[in-house]
Length: 614
Ligand SMILES: [Cu+2]
Image 1 (cartoon, rainbow, N blue to C red):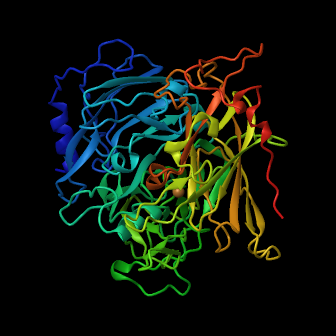
Image 2: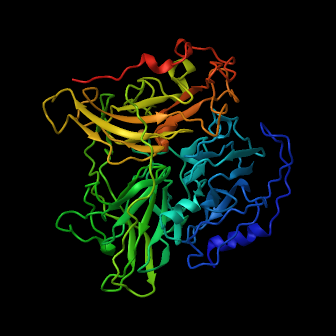
Image 3: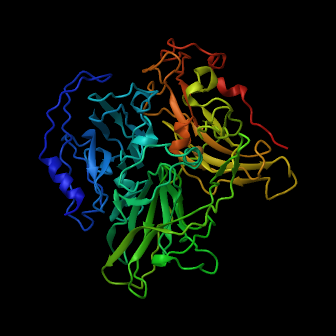
């Protein structure tokens, strides 16, 4: 019997008789009973995430009880790792709902530290977003009732927004799947659906999860610069599970990258994927994703038959931390009948090396063999059923996505960068709003204030030699283009060019590519992302005035890199919504903080114009 099933059984028979003082939540009775965890009686019993139990009989309400608590988890390898969980399982129970449902989550914090629950990708009202700007943190023993309508279909996930590099790493993550059955049926999407939550956990020789940023100053600097990458390949909380899939029929797989920092470039050799959707629902049409190439010529086979990766990122399915993909997969046995491998491939993302020099300076370089590490197995796929000669034909059209017309729209400039590591401690400070201002230093006067309903362009400038990504709370966006600039080689077309969006897609987490040159400050990239601060379905609820956690912050919506070591060390900012009704009345109570000059007079961001480059 697997660890998961044992834990599930224990859970069903335990009723937590605890009382909690409610903070910042509607005054109504809540118990910390996590509810039972249902396991479907299907082929992938040991692999599929536990399902959340809907305790509300109403058709259009999904109500679940969710408790964050400590547990011991085996990861399918019999370890006794101290972890943090939702409802005693990793991943946390999968919440399934349909578009238009109301989701209610009775959350209890049974952890020894404060936490929150953020609904990654979901367009919630401001005070349900779960960031520590939008709500007070839920203290140990505390509760919070989340309640919001699910306005869009998509593959979402939930996780804490308090010290997420620690809390997500320890196991606090779960899937939230919002389906649109009518749309799925219309487009002939397969009924066979799976959710693959991929993670890499760093486990020490004692089978425990190390504290962040420990060790030598070199180790501290590298964990902060490159993010924590782990050594345990997890799919749905189990190391390298065996999956059984019926061959010769299409499967729909929703993939969620919950890793702190690892760029997941996923592939099954000899099998293409057809990407049909991602962060925010379906694409307009499927995109074929070829399997990841191995090093030209095949490279030297490594133990276990693995190969060095070809760093060419145009093959394989690339998901940065927090990103999701919705893919169609048509498994067929290889000629030798061997199982298929669902595997990770490396990609060049600009990892740093670091050198602490005797003269008190620190040298940073990108000379690590980045992008060439051996592939790693994430799951073995066993096939049932008969082989078939049938060629799989994906649907030709999915849905129409309305492109945001950002012509002439005001820009919301941001700039990503970081300091050199501190020579004594290895500590690195990151920023995204402006150089020298990490998140804790930002005040409402430093950040963007936008109008509900307004169209803007995020202009995310990356000064660094490494890839990052960009995640915004509450409002998705569409990639327009990424511009690469090298001021030292202005005539070199390989260093100065504009890469248009590959396709139209609604996103909330997006790869921000590194600068094209080598000299900091002389070279950068700018990613332009169109956004409508659309409050449809949330009218009057998007100005984040309901909660003002501190006098120096407004509430507001977070925008940050989703490499959790970066956001945690300052690569995070917030933006504010001014909610203007048609009569010009400005809603929301902003009186708890001083109105900066930018917020006066309506379209605050109009003072920014798009930067031009030589
Ligand atoms: Cu980053």
